[in-house]
Amino acid sequence: MGCDVFGYVEFNDPEDGWTKAITIGAFIDRNYDVYGCLWGFRNGTHFRPLIGDSEHITYKHIREADWDEEAEDLDERITVFNILENGEEEWSYKVGKETNMITDEERKHLAFGGSVELINGAGRLQRCRRELHKRKDILPDKVNLLFSLMELLANEYGDENVRMKIDIDY
Image 1 (cartoon, rainbow, N blue to C red):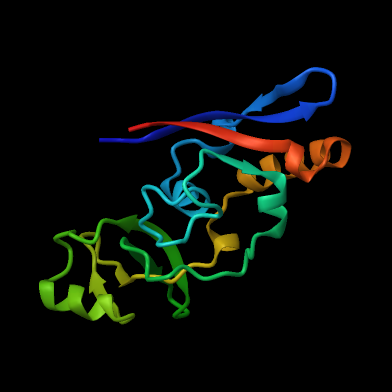
Image 2: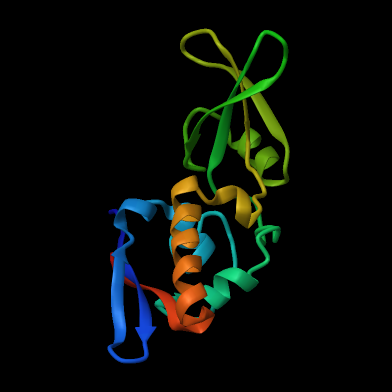
């Protein structure tokens, strides 16, 4: 069953109070990596949430976050790369850790940071591994654009007077 986040960015205007500026749906979509990185739920990437048990994040939290921070553990999912003729890897897709494309023995190997090579159904050489991510590498460009919009508002209203507020639909 899927999970969605609905919400908006708002600012605290001295005369009008908290005012909605923009909805976040088009920026965040259904991206569980972002959910884990920012709020700590659906957190297969194993990041500590930016703040404790809260459904809003101020621009101050975003500005002060350590975006080079690594997750606390390897991603639960397996990342699959195509191996090109020159030996370089090309990202292909991610699969759940319970996939039947690898054996239980190979799965144990991946749990400790190893990699597994296999030939897919089309005869292509692929490499599978679980990755350790940094916060900055998990965020798509659209989320960074949302942060830039928050920064513009924070320049006018202050870092603690601009926040992203969410409702979670499990």
